[in-house]
Structures are given as C-alpha cells and as structure tokens.
Length: 288
Ligand code: ATP
Image 1 (cartoon, helix red, strand yellow):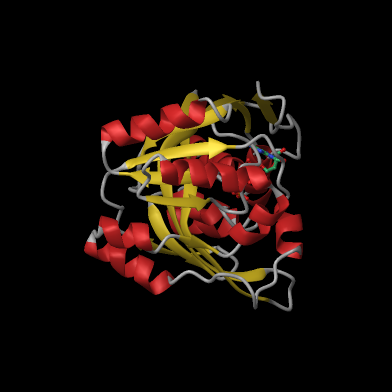
Image 2 (cartoon, rainbow, N blue to C red):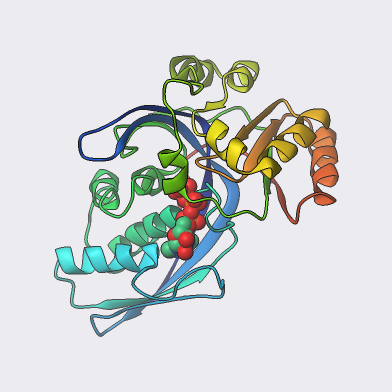
C-alpha cells in the first residue's frame, strides 16, 4: 500500500515577536500562507514496526534527525502501532531557508500515516501532536492561510490571499534560527501590524496585504547577511508589489499581481542568485 502527500512550503506574510517566555520560547504572532512549491512524500506500508526515511538531498539527514522520521515515530509509539512505514522525500523546497520545509514534511507524514494506519485522528489532534515536533508543524498540518500565535502552534484559519505570483530567492548563506533569535533586540526591532494584515486578508484586499507585510526578524538577518538586503533591493527595483524575508531567512519573497512583471523579476534575479522560484500563491487548504 502506498500513499502520496504533498508538503507545500510556507511564507510569512507577517511575523511579530512579542516577548521571550519563561519556558524559553518566544511568543509570536505570524500570518502564514502556503505557496505552490512542494516536497512530495511517498509512504509505503511496512508490516514490521520500523520507520525508514530516504531523500536524495545531501542537506537532509536520512535518520532519526529527520523531522519526517520523528513524525512517524511519534505516532507509532504514542498509539502502539505494530506496522511500519518507508518514507521517501522528493525534496523541492530549499533546506534551512525559512520556508518550513522540514516542518511541512513532518506534517505530511502525520496526515499520511494517520490514513495508512487507519488511526482516525482529526486534523486538530494531528496539529497538537505536530507541536511536539516543532512550532511550525501545527500550521503545516492544515496548510492554507492562518494566524499562528503562542509559540506558533495555536492556529486560526484565515481566507486565502487573492491570487498572485510569489517570486522566492534564497541566497547561498546559512542562517541559524537560534542565532537570529539570540541577536534580536525586541525594543529596537520593527513590529508589523498583525491586525491590519488579518483585516486585509478578510477583506481580500491585495494592496492592504502588500502594505502590511513585515517581519521582526528581518533586521537581524539583514545585519548578518548583506546578500538578503541586495535581493530585497533587486526585487523592489524590478517592480515587486511587496518584498519580505520569510521566517528567520535567508529566503526573500515578493508578491506580484501581473504575469509579465513577475517574469521580469524572476529573470532579473536569475543572473544574481542560483536558487530562484516563480510560483503561484496557494493560500487554501489542499486535500490529497
Ligand atoms: P522553519 O521555516 O520552520 O524555521 P526552515 O525552512 O528554516 O524551517 P528546514 O528546511 O525545515 O528549515 O531545515 C532546518 C534543519 O532541519 C536543516 O538543518 C535540516 O538538516 C533539518 N531537517 C530535518 N528533517 C528535515 C526535512 N525533512 N527537510 C528539511 N530539513 C530537515
């Protein structure tokens, strides 16, 4: 028996960090949405209670460090499942990019093994389990567009943004989320207007969405890696409607509502950066 699951990348339309909590996590408010750039997860039923993971990407570990492996193992142990699974990951989302690739793989495995092992868990139950793996996994269980609060695991669904193009560009620098948070000075940082972003989504107001994109972590990563600022500048000059770094970076994305302009921005970045993608905004929950 085989099951296929799509694991789309997310971008942060806004990301605000409110404060550090006593448990060490940061309290955040994030508006997240999915884009049409996805890993493909193929699950094969095994009749022994083992979990195997395999991906061709040299940047992704093929062992218990893989978030997809941890997702299957968590469910297998928690529900004493006597069957196993082989997980094959076709990796299309750039790794360690701020696009939640690993979290989305883990979420796809949660959804997939739930079906494969006939567990009958609801999406809400899967999202709660996902939070044990990582703060972005809960959002990825549902996909679509949502406001994520708490440490990112409390999800309120939102309407999808109006259709548009998303051009993504990842500079070849490594960014550690931990380092970005360590260098964050909350007082001096930019704080986006999350309420205004939520209202713009509810109104289907593309211009409102574009004018309220913002990311508290962006300033830190810009100071650490000048390439991020150069890509932002290039996108703005080429005519993007809105430009922002996703998550803790280093991927920068822009929103564009016209095909020709999106293509021009994509072309202008191709000569500048090796990893560039031009994809459609998804924003709604997909069923596989
Ligand atoms: P986020 O936006 O949630 O912070 P990210 O896009 O910055 O995530 P990932 O691509 O999820 O980062 O990878 C972060 C780290 O997790 C990498 O160093 C990678 O080795 C490890 N990892 C474990 N499993 C996976 C997976 N299935 N796919 C990608 N990376 C994985």
